[in-house]
Image (cartoon, rainbow, N blue to C red; front, side, top):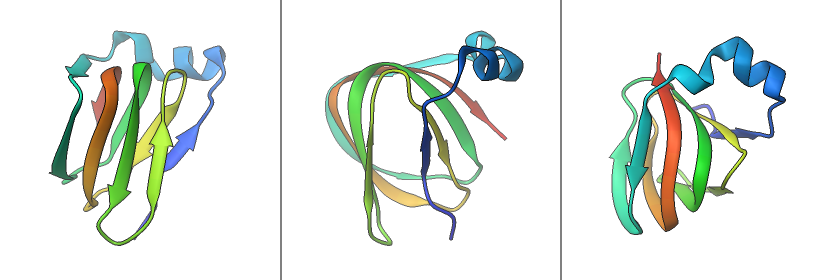
Length: 90
């Protein structure tokens, strides 16, 4: 299974992808299970999050990070500071 990918993208890349026209998702401090039935790409505007794969391994990210979650990922989201992000499924 593919891994969660965290990048520090250039403004040029964000504009090429059209990130700033994507919907915004917000969530308060919380912890919950999640399953990805599609690939998700997101750009974090605010917050601090750790996502732990149920297959093992954890990834932390925050403002300025571009994160790609693979299809069929089962994980636990641990939102440590309220999160606000642009997102897109494909």
